[in-house]
Length: 234
Image (cartoon, rainbow, N blue to C red):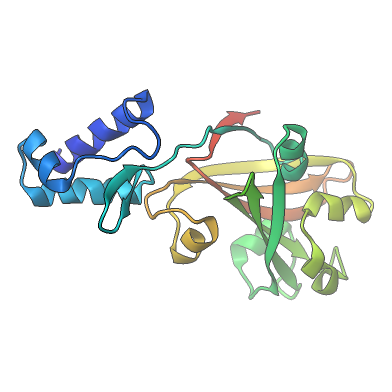
């Protein structure tokens, strides 16, 4: 392990243990280099990595500070209940913003998950979830126009897919297979989620089905900010 990683590990451990308060000023690069007995460039790289991981931030001309750590929100990972209802039931303020509604080009994997033919029109509907004033998740749903014929028009107004399904007569939902992975945000995702490059995203891919007929209603990809949630798998 290179020295900068040892420094990073120490700061993360101390921040998580409460050794440093929110917004507390940290030693300068020169001071840190002296304390840790490493070259200044090593201290700088350690701070840059902590910045990218969302633990610290730099204020030009003032130094580096501990970033305010929000309490993590408990999130039950389940594809048969609305994210909106789960958050509102727990007393959080939730705003959903639609960020896209567009027809996609043929994608073999998505079409297979939806169980539709190659000549079927499929729409991609994206929502940004803002919880208690902070952007925390991206929800991307893929739905077939063969099942929802008015999706090109109605899709532009959708903020909750579950509400849309209920409007169309589907009230019982079950989840198919789910795949979980850890990814890191690309440029657009960093802008949307207002996070740094090394903040991990818990990415969940699943499909939602009608609980009565087994009809696949959507294939979904959800990306949650790893620094905002603690997860319960049900």
